[in-house]
Each structure stands twice: as C-alpha cells, then as structure tokens.
Length: 114
Image (cartoon, rainbow, N blue to C red; front, side, top):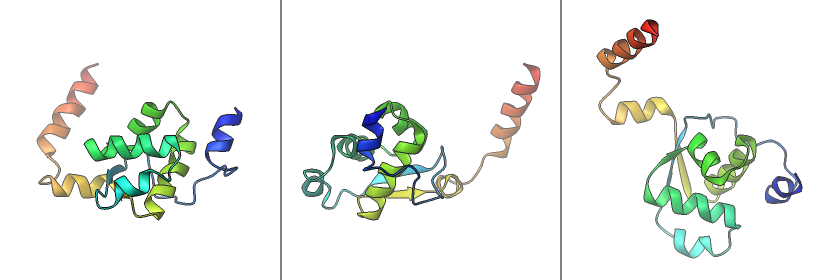
C-alpha cells in the first residue's frame, strides 16, 4: 500500500469534510488543459472523467480503483486549484427541478416489497 501514500504525498485525511460519497463534481473547463500537464496521472484521470460528464465521489473512486479516502484527498487538491467544482446532492436535485416525491415514494414502496 505504498502507492496511495505516495499519490497523496503522505496525507492520510482529506482537508475538506464536505465531500460525501454522492457529492457531484464537475470540471471547470477554463484552463484545465494547460493545468493538467502539471498534474499526477490520477488527477488527470479525474479531470478527463469530469470534463466528459459530472461524477460522484464514489464513481471517481471506482474509476481510479482507489480507496474513497485517497480519492477525496485528490479531489480536494483539484478543487483547491480551481479545476473542479463540488456540488452538494441537494443542490443537484434543486437544479434539476426539485425532488420528485412520487418517485421517492415508489422507490420506498418497492424496497418494502423486497
């Protein structure tokens, strides 16, 4: 497990505590190409994925095949550099027109039937 330690430059905990598994991240396209040359390979993978389509923290960790804690540290680096924007899940729901209560009730009922 030396590799995650070197990827994070020895950091073992993310500086940000607002990144949850379902926090959605999207890339700021302005300046991303120029900045990506200075990034580690894992940072570049995150940037490429988020430039194509916004992704949740859990999705990015799976894409990288890294622990979520390591992924959060890398995401914090990119957010601090202004290359990524993190949106809380509730703001994503509001931006798409709000939470569909009917859909949530249908999911709840389906789960109860299991």
